[in-house]
Length: 304
Image (cartoon, rainbow, N blue to C red):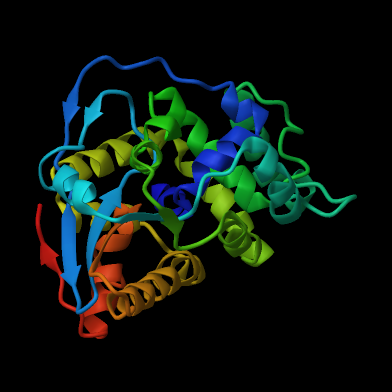
């Protein structure tokens, strides 16, 4: 379940801002400082040096990760590249309406038989939501929202996520900030999933909600230690839908690797240094960006 939240990437923060029930589920702040040493890679070409940093999109407060090789690489970079650029809630709402809403006259609960509908309504009630809370939304959106609420209640917040913090640092420095994708594109990936796939995903979320805490704890622990292999295993081991895996992970990793290949060869007067920050699960394991780079005969070097 966590894997699909990771695949959604930085878009999650924008979705949260556009949906009121999630915004009300704010966590208590955590004061304990947690030191992290996430994985960082470097690839070099004739016209550019590119750093690849694996991020976590939701974190509690006081996680210290911006130091050592990561801080040094970011400081010397000319441009920040993340999955998407931040949008305001006002900008996101029409995109959500276009990509996440059901056609008029359709209802989410009406898509399910009596047993699954009962399970869904029980889950909504447990989160103090009315049975009709997601009636106008597609199943994928309801799944993401339901899976996110317990994470935020645990003290994890997109505002503390690595992507958001790097964006603020780039803005403060007046540094260019580019994106690999758009919010419209990312929502479109989910919206284009066949209804049976979306419904299956939603019911998996309902079934596995009690496991969210242990799943997330393991993923965060592996990320802090820079254990990319373990993080990839935890993020992707429960993916049992090939279409979701291909759409949300593999195809995007291939596109990003080709983007890196083009950027390394991009002609210019001066050698460019680029800092790319994407979800950590994209950078390790079978089909990862690192795998796709190797297929393109691009060598990477682990720095941390």
